[in-house]
Length: 150
Image 1 (spheres, one colour):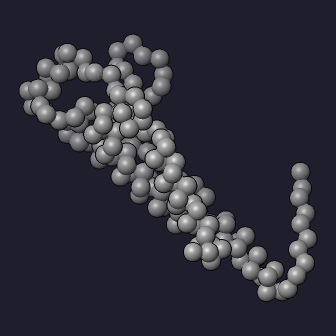
Image 2 (tube, rainbow, N blue to C red):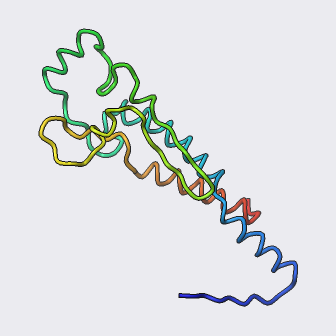
Image 3 (tube, one colour):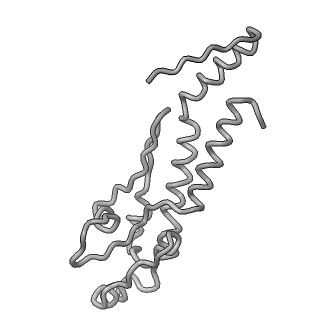
């Protein structure tokens, strides 16, 4: 499919359109802002709410895990012993991509939606209304900036 648009008008207006459309090719600033926001969000809220921030509380720990955790890690939220997993969120971004990830070896086992036999799913990365709204705000701000609309 091909779309052709012919714009007629003042040279100044056409020049402005070229600047605006060229500005929509590089989202590096917005993706970096989103990455910083999401890393901070995922490092805190899922752990403090034990998953409730995504609409469903994580399954309770096995009794054996509760007993083991009580020895050295009592009073810490679920999935926080050494804070390795909550502090292992990071992002990589470019002008056209954003990748949020967690480098802790065991993160994938908790996050995965594969069928389970032993370890219940305790997702730390999901999208909720708050995240959607923040991403929308970041993008709208970027669009307005490109169009010089404040």
